[in-house]
Length: 336
Length: 278
Image (tube, rainbow over all chains, first blue to last red):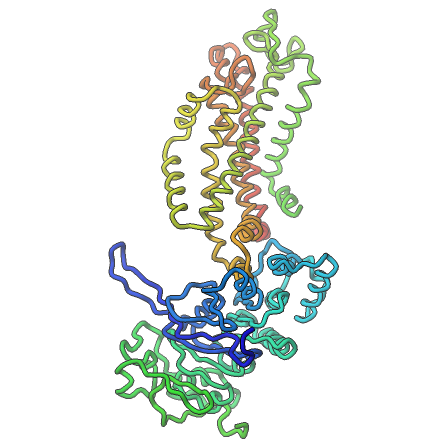
């Protein structure tokens, strides 16, 4: 098959535009949900995607899963674009790439028992192997996510949010995926439950070697699980790099703002960074989209979209100001 | 089973269920036990009032036993109601499921047709259609279904559209489910509640429509008994013998009110979330 060193998922220049029309004969006023984003996910790697709501992170995940059409760009899964796959390749893609959604209740059919829910992926892919063998698989999957097999005959509404998300994860695992896209998979959960589910993801990645695209709006949570992080703002990736590097010295003021938005027990009251403008539509037309909220904006930021700059270690940023040094929460710690 | 238990907790619904059940049992089991035939004419005993001359509910203008005729008429009504319901539910689910799932042009065309047909007053549409066909039970079933499927179709279309974008459907789509699987296994099971409600109310409507059509002479033909035709016959004797009109009217009312109670109760009972709140 594909080259084992090549990335499992390779997203290139993805753009998604929602045409908006004002009135019946009104002029088009397009909404750019994704503006030319590129990222890769290696086998067994966890890539975090963070950004506020409306930044396009979920759109990126859904296009990567080929459940949302794109405007332009390429998605390569094992070197093949789902858009051009034949039947057989498509089937394999649907088996090897799984998705977990934000709302753990809405993503489970309320009329099905856990057993029926977990059997569905097997049935869809013709992987049933007799009742006894199937049941063994179901129990094994439940065991992986830490749920007892006694739950098999229960319905989704009988579970708590964390348990439902475990059921979702178990269902995704039924097909032995190589990639799991977790779209805000822990955002709807209580903080303590969130930690348990994040731990579960880390455990699965370690035990099963699954690559994970972990989409969330909470940078500290993403930081715990991710090898690398992509920070999105208004449809663009403004910074992408290794987690430690990003937490030590964020290269984009927006990343710094997200890092400082997390209250740390010993942190001083937030400085000028917290002076955030409401996320209104004035997205710095023509220039850097973050300019209106950026405390470090200079005149050059208003002229043209800032180009993506490559830094050492595969780090990328879309901020013009190279000389800027902002301390992240890991700054000064000797874990370089 | 939970649904049934919840249904029985709703007072009107359980009353409705009892009404319909008593009627259904009576018109299937009772006629063979009675010594009369619904077509048997007895000119010596015309216009007997109820509880006289061995006729529990009396006799009509040509001496036929009213009770037996009522039961036979009710049986016909219920059968027509059920058949029309099955036919319209199946058609409505198929069309509504397809349009709701695929959307686009098929949906726009079909739903506009439905809208424009529903613009006509049902009675006139029914009578116009009835005048084209051979009068009789199958024709009534056909034309009632022709009107009723659209209601079902609209409900199913709307529900499917509402659920189509829900995460649990997208989740199985992302797992590689086909359109047929999504529609039959994921979507339709989640709207059975709505379908059952519309279907139950459709039975009631079909019974009422049969009565209209037969009353106006285009339905079940004499001498076969029909509740609507009996009402029509009774008109001439309304002053001296009012029970001839009251009794068939009462049976129609029992059937229609009972079914409407059950339908409205089901609306609450099939949705567990609503049931808990109630």
